[in-house]
Amino acid sequence: MANVKYVGEYEEKVSPAPEGVYWGRRVATLKLEPLAADGDDVYGVLVAPCLIEILSVGVVDVDGGHTHNATNYRTFELTNRGTAGSGTTAVAVGTTITDDITQYVPFALAITPADRIVERGEVLTFSSTHTASGVAQGEGILAVVYRPVKKQ
Image (cartoon, rainbow, N blue to C red; front, side, top):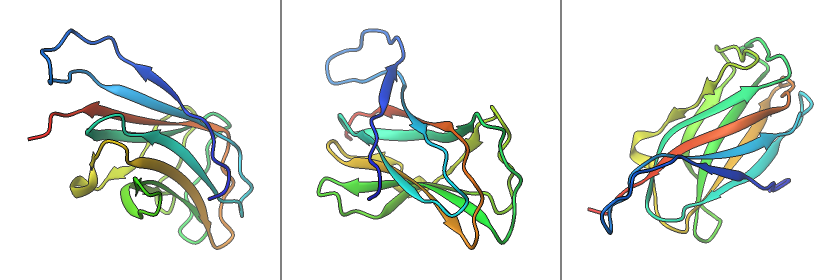
């Protein structure tokens, strides 16, 4: 893994819940550093504090965005590394093959429905990789919205 960076966490105000029941959404945020067109990076995002469900994943570019390109593009992936750090399960993926990234507009990653549940202690990472000559990544933020869930 390349640079592993710290992520802050924001927790919505939630109503008190009966014991064993979790309510409310939480948002893990991460500052994304600018990358050259041929640059790649991996960031540590979150260690699941309990059984959680990933609700949405988005990237917001604050440097001006960029136009899609079917040959030179960037792929974003939220990956479940498991508890041992060796997992490769893609939880959410997005590419700039056909979609523009507009400044200050969330670029949503597609969540893999079968992999949206993350067990307590599993580690999530975010990667930004280029294909062919790639496209530059501006400074931005990653937001991962999740909620604790009760084990069935």
